[in-house]
Amino acid sequence: MEELQILRHSASHLLAQAVKRLYPGTKLAIGPAIDTGFYYDFDSEHTFTPEDLEALEQEMKKIAKENLKIERFELPRDEALELMKDEPYKVELIEELPEGEVISFYKQGEFTDLCAGPHINYTSKIKAFKLLSATGAYWRGSEKNKMLQRIYGTAFTNKEDLAAHLEQLEEAKKRDHNKLGRELELFTTSDLIGQGLPILLPKGARIIQLLQRFVEDEEQKRGWQLTKTPLMAKSDLYKLSGHWDHYQDGMFVLGDEEKDKEVFALRPMTCPFQYQAFLNRGRSYRDLPMRLNETSTLFRNEASGEMHGLIRVRQFTISEGHLMCTPEQLEEEFKGCLELAIYMLKTLGLYEDVSYRFSQWDPEDKEKYIGTQEQWDEAQGIMEKILNHLEIPYKVGIGEAAFYGPKLDIQIKNVHGKEDTLITIQIDQMLAEKFGMEYVDRDGTKKNPYIIHRTSIGCYERTLALLIEKYAGAFPVWLAPVQVKLLPIADRHLDYIYEVKKELEKNGILRVEVDDRSEKIGYKIREAQLEKVPYMLVVGDKDIENNAVAVRSRKEGDLGSMSIADFVKRITEEVETKKL
Image (cartoon, rainbow, N blue to C red):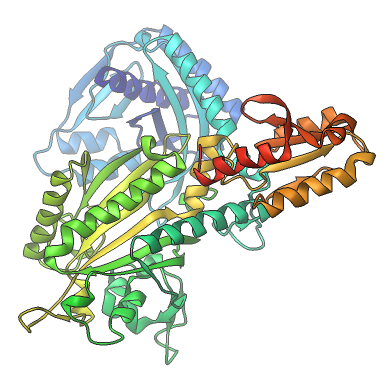
């Protein structure tokens, strides 16, 4: 893999050299290798189009054939700055390097780039590559900086691997929830409403409703108590929780503290609201563990460049929960939260796709967090012990913790390989004290409970996006917005079709549609297949005579004639077992 990363990094330099040849006034930013290939960021007056990418790819092939030697050299800081004086982004990077740091460059023909390397030794070794897209990207990922143009590409050691990867990308495009979700009329967006504020259409809203009912019922079975709290609060609440100091940039603030008597903000998370339920009356150790859950609508002021379909939005709904417990209960309750999350993932068919990240604080950037070094060491030590005891195969993410505590992030990738957090479970020993949350212990002393912040299925919108991509829109029967499509061959079969519909609904099969259009049956079947409906029931003269239906399965094709009772038994079993 390291060899492939070196090849891809060298391919990014090949791209930069081609851009410099065709668009000499372009300024260079950065061009790393990434898991799926490489990219390079450019500051250019020219806007790169798909046609430009083809021209750049041809120029890259030309440079590769020139078999230029790729040579490394080092310079002192002043000479390095002089060499890069016409490249402002490179100058900025050099100036930030610590004193005594080696400043290295790589040269191939007329092209030289600031780079730590390593690289291959000749351009001719870069043979199997492809430029994929051009998009916008802020310099250093901050919207406060200039918007640059990022060109993505990929490279492999041979053409066969490249072809297989490109085929995989084509499949990913077909499964992209942002495309498929709109085609299947699950959601839409409106410029009039705003970016990151999707509208769930009836089919998409139905899936979310099914998920919410499933989650809330399962949480209730496991001892969680449902709450419903306000969507906004005064700034006082967020100042007490620490969100005002540590998260205000990500919040929607209503009002101006300098002008208004009271300033409100839409909630970015529910924890400080649910704490008020704990504080409603005095608590003792007998009340613990106290498990509070909520289907919470939240608001976060995401950067415009970060938003994507249903994956990252500004308003979303989450299966949120907060659990107050004693130190002795902490591990068992954490385990219960994890078991709930794993149950959800397995039921949805997403379990095999996730990985685990133990997100810790960054002791070099203490301004981001509340609490002392000792408190963080204790909280992270406890969490590490729990994760190791539960044998969770995690990676460590420094600087990824919440501002009040470490967390286990359950990570998942979309079809394009972009990783996001789906579910989190966090340990918090700080906010209870800030809010004055106490319980009377067995010995009569007052103590602050530990708090576990958790989601069980994560953000519903993001989960829906991942399910669209996982199943390419062909949802399992229990989640399908339309479970059965009834297809009469002719108008004379409609009365019987509607009797079948009533019988299905009487047996709890409620998401049923009748296609009563005056179209040929072949057309109706194709339309239902494109809508990815799990079952089609076709009715003609013979079916009415036999008091039956002709069953077509999305997965298995034509299943032949079946009594209505037998079909009800079949589909009911699939729904009740949540068969995937």
